Length: 148
Image 1: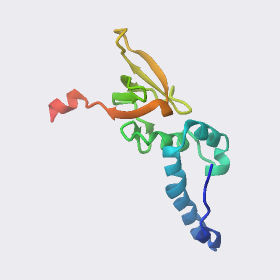
Image 2 (image 1 turned 180 degrees about the vertical axis):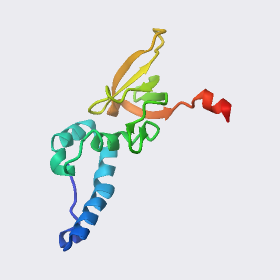
Image 3 (image 1 turned 30 degrees about the vertical axis):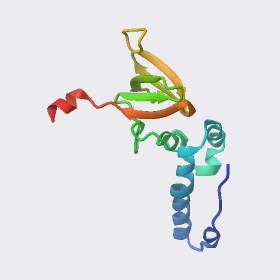
Image 4 (image 1 turned 90 degrees about the horizontal axis):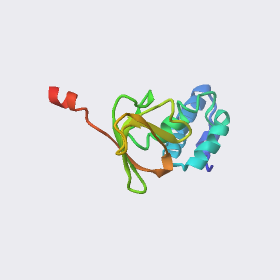
């Protein structure tokens, strides 16, 4: 994992400057890295997350930031959004639709609850690796659209 140290970070002299420097590093380096890092690097980072990010839960930071590469999938503070159906397009062109299962979606693998072409009852679909996903789009709720 490559993380550059800026020269001005080494010259902080007050606690307030230290806090500001840390927040800047998280916003400008760590979060963007999580959005683009491959799954293997994310799993490696999870093992060292306490040293990298401090005393924060990796599922609330590392994985939430990693999944934010798909904005229609995540809620800013809650992580994976379970209340909206999504359409997932995989790298191989396959399309899967369902409701994300946040608890079952662990370590860069997305699980949906939905109906596939072979069945008429909802069931677990996936897991789908974050690296196998090309895009995710939220499906508009027709009940909400009709009431507007």
